[in-house]
Amino acid sequence: MVTSKHCRSNFKHHNIGQFRFMKITLRLYAGLSQYLPENAVGNEAKITIDPVLDLQGLLECYGIPDEQIFLVLVNGVYIAPDDREGYMLSEFDTLAVCRYAYWQSSLQLNLTSEVSGRSSS
Image 1 (cartoon, rainbow, N blue to C red):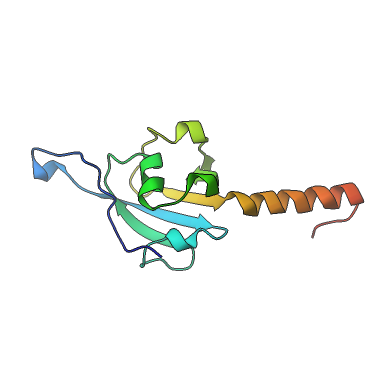
Image 2 (image 1 turned 180 degrees about the vertical axis):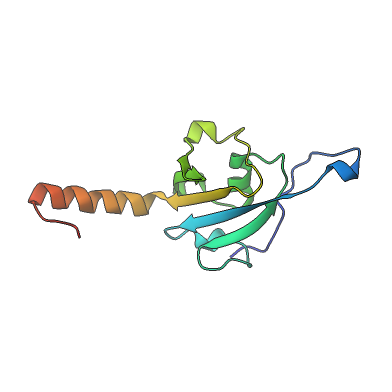
């Protein structure tokens, strides 16, 4: 697990009263939990981020390797890789990230079961 951090950007406010961090929930699945901060419970952590940090910046801030990321959901909605840079999160959003190998294994199991006529349940 990584130490707790705010993942600040280089953005500076002239009036400190206008600036505030926002809270979101970060959920990491399929072996990515090593990138969660110390305050994580299971695969989930409540984190505080700089509101000007985009989705791609947040993933980089927590050190999650691009090649390990397969599925990214914000509040249950899929965010394509090309849309992650510049995608701004909102207060209380839930960000879920799943590793590629997990989904690939599940898909192969389901396809094998369908071809052989067996149920995967």
